[in-house]
Length: 196
Image (cartoon, rainbow, N blue to C red; front, side, top):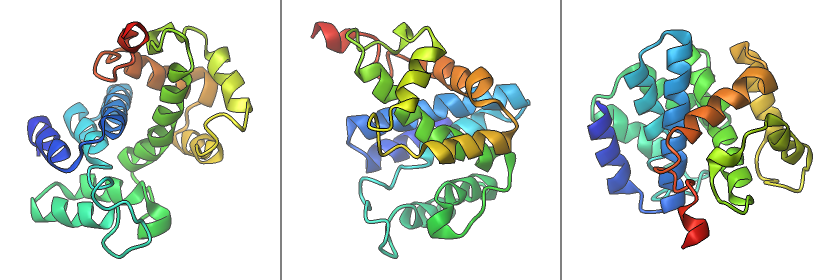
């Protein structure tokens, strides 16, 4: 499945602007890591883009057809590469039992929740512009405040970065932030909402 086909599938299944932004952010982060690791940028990007495409339609993750099980079935039916399906299954390993044992799957787990945290950090800035986050220390300050973006599983992100072999604050957060800043307009985090 190429990027255009993946985006068509995502937009068929998802209408929520915030969920679309999340998937675009994860795609950008996955592409940045593919470049870092010398991997297939298109494949990694498509994996990030598709990882939550069925969530809006099937949010009950306790149901047999809930996220990500319906999505995994649809992807298999469409002949999507096994390694993409594996990574998407592994990003929900507590439900699927599929461990993130490939570099692509480990990366998806590492960037998934972090993108949500960085979006939250951007949304509390007066400018509503992610490009205004110029100091990692400001992200770290929010990280330490457990009441901020409390639903984000910080320990999962920390462990995932460790499994990738990257330092959380020196490498992981800056790389994901830069990837998201590069597509600020696509994420509606380019300041336009502050002036609307």
